[in-house]
Length: 524
Image (cartoon, rainbow, N blue to C red; front, side):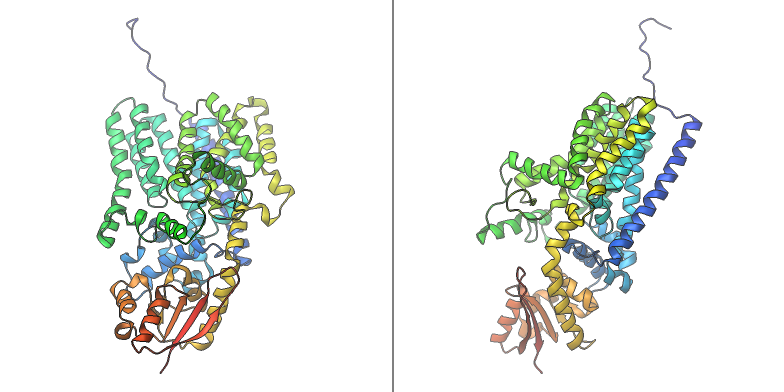
C-alpha cells in the first residue's frame, strides 16, 4: 500500500446483536407510545376537550366539507392551511359520530405522535446511544402540552412525525451513504412541507447537508432530495394559482396571517410585541418555548446543546434549531404574533408555537445523559427525566400546561355561544331546511347541531355563495341564515332587505368578550 494513500473514512455499522437490541427497544417504545397516546385521547375525550382549539375544529371541518358539501371535492381544501392534515382525516370525518366528537381528528394525530416518538428515538439512538434515546423520547412523550395537542386535530403531531422522520433519514444516509435514504428524506420533507410552512424553510438546509456529507454521488443525493421535497411547495403554489389566480394567495390573500393582522391594525389594534424588533421577537418565542417545555427542562436542554456538540452531533442540533429560527423570523416579519401570559398583553395566543423548539430541547437533555460515563448513564437518565418532569409531577394542575390553558381561555366564550346557537337551531329548524352562513368561525354551531354541510351554503361553494352575497334577492333560497354581526352573510341580508328579501332576525346571542351571533329565518 503506498505510504501517501489516504485511509478511508469508516462508516458506522451495527452488529446483529446490537440490531436485535435496537429492534426490541423500538418495539417497546412503540408499545409505550401507543398506550400513552390512547390514554391521553381517552382522557381529553371523556372531558369534552378535543375541540377546545378553534383551529382544531376548523381543520376537522375542512376535511368534512371535502366529502360533505353542496360542492364536495378537492377544491374544498382551500388555501392558507396546507392540505395533508385534512387529507389524513378524510377516512374518519365521513363517520358522523367521529366528526361530531372530534375523534376524527384525534385518530390521525395520535398515530403521527407515535411515529414522531419512534423517529426521535431512532435518531437519538444513532447519535447519542440507546439510554439517551430512551430518556429523550420519554421527555418528548410525557410533556402535557404535546399529549394534549396530539389528542386533537391540531397540526403539531403530524409535523413532528414528518420533521423527525426527515432528520432520521438524513442520519441514515450519513451512516450508510445509500441514495435510498436521500429519497426517503425527500418524501418525509415533502410531507412536512404539506403540513406546516416551516417545512419549506428546511429544504435548502437539508439539500446543503447532502452536498456536504455525501462521499460519492453528492450531486445526485442532493438533487434527488431537492426534487422530491421541492415538489410539495411547487404543488401548493400551483394549487393556489389555479383556484385563486395567485400562487401566493396563502401568503397575501384576505385570510393570510399578514392580511388579518393588517385589518386589525386598521381598526386601531396596537402592534404586537416583536413586530419589526428582533430582540423582542426572540424574547416572545423563547418565553413560549420555556412555558411549553417547562422551565427546568428548557434550561437543561440549552445546557445540553454544549454536550451535544462535544458528542459531535452538530447536524441534529442545527436541524432541530431551524423551526425556532423560522418562528422568530415570522414574529419579526410575517404578521405572526405570539402572546404569553408573562409578557404584554398578558394573554394566550399562538403559545403552542413554542413547541417548535421542543425537539431541540429534548435532544439537548438527551445529550446530557450521553455525556455521563457508561456506568452511571442509566442513573443519569433517571435524574434528567426526574428533574425535567418535576413541574408536571409536583404541580399537576391543568394550568401548568400552557397549550391546554390557551385552548381553555380562548374557547370559553366560543363554547357558550356555539352551544346556545346549536340548541336554538336543533329546536327550531326542520331537517331539510338550508342555512346560509360562513364556516370559518361558525362551523362549530353546525357540528354541534348535527347539521350536514350539504344543507349549508357557505364560502367554499364558490359561485353559488358569491351570487347569494351579491344578489340575495335572486340567488339566496335558504330558509335560515347564521351570521356574525357585520360579516359577509349579515351584510348580504341587509342588502337583500332593501331588495325585498324577507328575513327576520329571530335570535341574537351576545356573550361578553365574543362577537354577536345572529340567526335569521325567512318569512313565508
